[in-house]
Image (cartoon, rainbow, N blue to C red; front, side, top):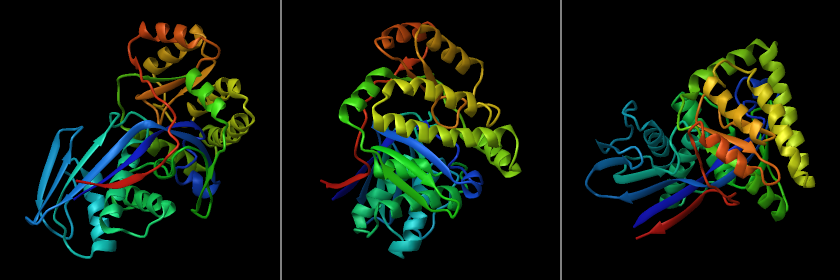
Length: 341
């Protein structure tokens, strides 16, 4: 028997960075994001050979260990190892023997929430294997704890919840460390219009988000200054975007994205750079009305809102600078698990 799972990647539209501690702890944060038809996958095949084999097919990395209650990190597959260590500690209570295979449809460091989505998918495979009584909030919170506490990886809280719940969500991060996921009932025709007018553009670069997130954390800890003011504006942006989408004011997306982008760049050095500014300015000259970098910044994917039929002109303009358009559709489901043969 094989135990499988998949979880969707996400596009972050508004509020990015307000889910990162200590800002979310001090002021509360708000994010609006939506999942798309790109996925992280995990499969577990139980074995009886006393070995644990971890294979990341997208990275072509394989690690093999003797079965043990705790595995050492540092070999390049820390997400897989962190999840195993926590599952054994909290649920299995004994060493396991199996082969795990993982794969992600997008490059790591691309800004679509790949790491957290993979963690959710890995946990989903364990949930399917052991029949663990974990709901959506439980899985998302466990994924967050493993990444941010057990493994000490810097980052926020939005991606774990987006991957687990799926769809369009307005997610609130309360000062008491609670998270509330508000699914948005957006009419299908509005979603189709948004998907048609939105370009997902890969700069063909990746980035290490931890340095940027560390600067955001330090800025928020100061409790004043341009960075904190920008985070307040981004929280306001998420509310503006929620109202626009629910009312069907899809063409406001461009101006709201641009408002957020201008403020996001104030949060930390490195969010934008000469290359990213070049892509952004080229798209705006060609007819886009707004956009942003996806994720923490520095590289990876960008999104641009192109009203009317300007998408085709913007695509041609961006082609002059390199990079590529990534086709996508919005995906309404979250984490899915099943048994295979």
